[in-house]
Length: 436
Ligand code: GDP
Image (tube, rainbow, N blue to C red):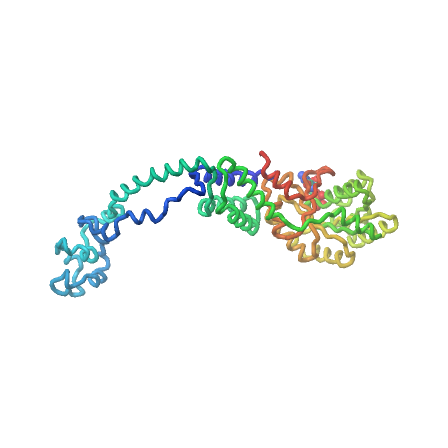
């Protein structure tokens, strides 16, 4: 479970820890080397390029555009006579510049020099700068070494954490985290990590704690306790009506059976309406679960109107003092017009207390789109995310709440009746950070 997310987040933590470790410890009292120092010890630019080495300071050759060069030549100083515009520019270059007129020659003289001679590295006089840096470095290093004995903290800068956060964002997208959720997580991490002071010895734990906070914030959505809610409906003397919708094979029938067992364990009795009349096998499958759990299943013939099946189940519950009706429906894609219309009709006619979308975590990014479409057809009350046990990526669980703002009520973590857990963001984060 969550293997991909786990790997990606742990390499993110390691990369930030790496940054922290390679960075020299900077206690608050340690004076930082002022960045202004370097420019101060460099010779002025004009000075650099006016060194009497004509070959090094030759301008760029401009053979292709002679007219431009002609314009640039200060005529008084270079040409004894104004050169006609049509005259080839390279001719005046034969005039040897007097040493005193170097700056003029630099701007104007077309060169016969090979272009590689004009590399900037050759222009800059390196020696004086190097001498200054060699003098400064030991002073700063020594000061840092001494003061770091008193404070083991370092401060992470925005620039230092930015590449790792960018990489994490890309990695999250690969793990099926939705674009918006990944961007939110990245920007939350950026604001938490930039400028953060971390203890070098505990950098790993401290950064993990920050990532943990960000993950929890991304998954944070209003919680909803289905058991309490249905107990309250029962207390009002109403039959709780719960409609389950979702794509084919997402785990609706299995989830209904798991939930029926959990409700039964909590003293809330149920009846199941076999509303997936679209598939003969689906009716048999529900009946099988009902038999195993000792729960009544109300069913009609294959192809019957699912709303009618649900009506009968509600009537049965009312007549027998059963607290809750769980209505199975045919799986449908959000794009299937007729089936979506049928779902809207069930919603209008049955007035369910709760409409729950059952989707599989392994659907990845498609899951978010499905929920959005179903939600716009019949306003959903919550989501049950199945097959987390088979979801190597984990992105769906991370982004679904952020994207839909709907409560995730339960997660399915296997095929047994007990493999249904209340959704708990902390549990997911613990699993993401658990040793693989
Ligand atoms: P439906 O078509 O939406 O009603 O889906 P089903 O309930 O028939 O489930 C389809 C398959 O998914 C079945 O083989 C289930 O056992 C399996 N399934 C459902 N939930 C889970 C789960 O949380 N984990 C795993 N591994 N399999 C599940």
